[in-house]
Image (cartoon, rainbow, N blue to C red; front, side):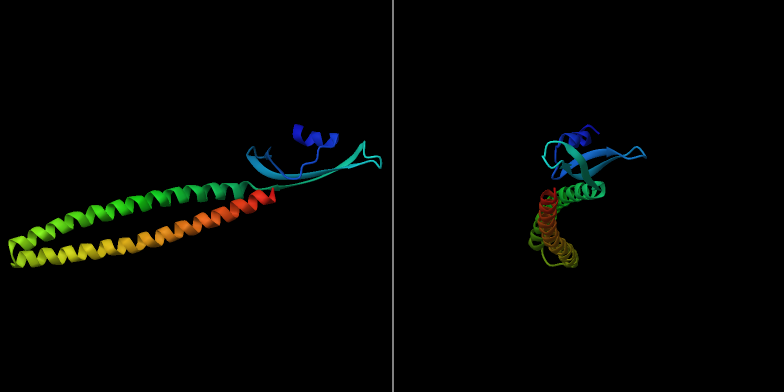
Amino acid sequence: MNLIHTTHEGVKWETVEIPIVHQNGTVRSVLWNSATITDPGGTKPIATIAQGRDISVEKSLMQEKERAIVQIQENIAKLAILNDGIRNPLTIIEALIEMEGGDQLSASVKTQIIRIDEMVTTLDREWVKSVKILDYLRRHNEICSHFIRNER
């Protein structure tokens, strides 16, 4: 309320974000604009025109999106490590099986190695998709942040 009272002294807010306690007790973020109308001499305030827009949900969504981006980055890093962690032992197993000879067990193990390698290849493709999604979210987040900053 102290901020609002400053408009009586002629303080004009182009756009300012202020916390306001809602009647249910929650604190809301409000994007507030005000203008003071003065007498013809421009010295005495006559009235103040103000409007506010609750941006609490927008801010919450932006924070949630930022947390999601961080989580996606962590998942992508873990996926890259996992892919290498699986392929490296498979290569060693395959080399050992080839050194042992070509019996039925070797063929069976090689078949399973191929299946596992195909699964890891699928993970690689999903990793690439995740990187593209992350890039999209980053660009979109920058656009939204720019829009919100300019709106203020």
